[in-house]
Image 1 (tube, rainbow, N blue to C red):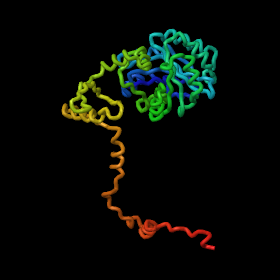
Image 2: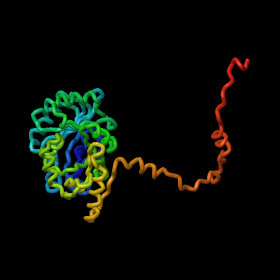
Image 3: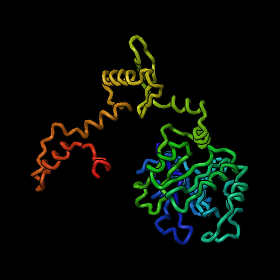
Length: 331
């Protein structure tokens, strides 16, 4: 399911641009076209309660809408931080945001992260900070500070600017998220979105999934269709496995029969008339060699209009080192 937890619906700051303003009709149209199932409304330094309710009602049967705000933080250097709340607490969230920005100039204000976390400490919220190549970006030092203040690593996410960078940080166990940061609602469906492999029905489910709660993971997995197949790692050994219509990865120490198991699962899937692709990590060297093999290639250097230098290479090949003459003999 596709989610967008960095979505603007209003021109708030001077640099935002009018194309961020959206009607409820255009909002619903674009949410449907992009097939978004969860969207967080995160305008700069403000939360419009009335618009939130209007947009939420416009897509209530097709998409969850979560309340949020994007805040300018006075870090080292300064950065943008998104705070998204449990929609069941939207009234309290609205009051907290009003308190936080009371008397502030939305174009120039820079809030202290300690003040922000203290303001939302009694609410059920998650934090998403601009990071790495998404400017203005949070530093590693400020990320550590935020995790310390929140006291729950699973509630803190970082947002790079592209999926490639996101994948790198995810591989190093960062909580990562990417959103549209939409600038023109007429092009909303062309934006970057995050994809959850498991269907999430609520804010609570999302947070438990981020925490890698075993019960919620199993519960959400049970909602996905699956096929029971028999993996055969070694002759006479059968391992029943639940395979999902998604990417399934088999981990294990060397010599445990992973390749054999994958081959047997693939054969059974094909026999059932299912379309699938298998990939064995150890095959990558052989695959690369086959792609770079030139043994059967007709090579004609003269077709390039240059000399082959065949005689020169032969001279180098035939060259042999000689025993050097000692200084004593030379004198």
